[in-house]
Length: 497
Ligand code: AHR
Image (cartoon, rainbow, N blue to C red; front, side):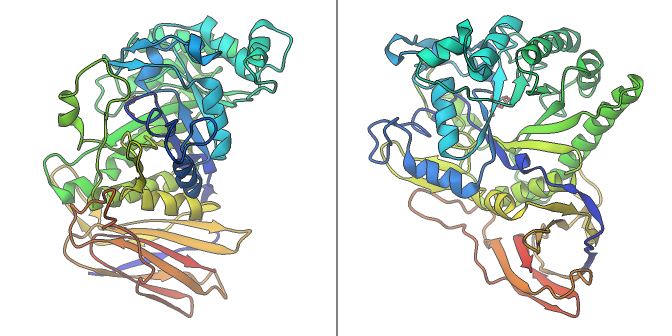
């Protein structure tokens, strides 16, 4: 087995929008309470935010965080979460059947986002509410002063507006699990009218319309087409959500699942462009892949949890090494669609299907999936290049012609740095890869980071970090030929300068 690739400075897909390395914090499980926020914890700051978690989020350089849901937003009253804490109501949270204490709300989250140096992607409730609550929230967060809602924010101690630029019009409105589920026609209409009012309050905002909850939804991709047909002029992005799992324990098939993600992106892009043509529009709708990850390990145990408690341990997937490989391949897929995917959120960020875990009143630790996310976010900024890759292929249960090797490359012109991301999905064999990088004249090999483990099921825990990257990858560069030894089942990051 062997593979070849050409990487040329001039084969460019697009500038990478840094927002593709976004993430997500929902009022769900221990994401907020016990995750980012735990007053009384030795690491808590003056507002109760955990400083150890802030540091990890900063290390990941997360540029934007979606909030406050997720399914939770579809029955959420944002007014419950602002003003004096002692007056805030406790509510039944219907999406996850917990009790929401509302100790954290819009203002505190905006503070936390500042601390981690991220922007906020705010979702509005289009399940139980609509135009009025949404336009009031934009006035509350973004209008400087001199009106009811902006002055209320000032009264609440926030003199300056939060200036939130990115807004989601509801969440997964096609899903029967959603409070206030809507047909595409119903949703398209409310998205259009809500978006219109929100942009009248602040014309500088950008809006994300809901697409299908995943590719298995019976109305995919008609939901996208109908929604956009109605709301094309008001919205700027359409959302995609997708989670994968390996419950049948078929690693070869599991590691191929980013091919489904690739197909999903292509289908939604085509749907956007079909409606663009139908409308004779000059405007292009781009994609916000604002929920993606692996999610399946915790599903069974979640069914046993009692309802109506505060911050139960929901969706606490413990990720293994093969999950990190698929996450790496999903990041590669996003990079390869950098021309149309302008935002993406790894769902989620802390405790809930998350790269970062915390112990209540204890330490925080890094899951296996933390590492590919870290590498892509920190090194994957610049221009996404089109790799011309020739890789041996395999067939699996659901996929044919799966390349053993996945690759994306990012050229950072300012830093004169080329970063190549590679996954070898072969379960038994290493694959040598020769890359023609002659257009990067004078560049030298800086490092070859590898994440690998002999056991695909190896996990990290609070006490043991079994899956961590090392810098001893085998590669060499001579006369514009980069020779890389890709170990079996490995995630690789190669940097040239
Ligand atoms: O991220 C967990 C949940 O997955 C979100 O609340 C929902 O939008 C999706 O179904």
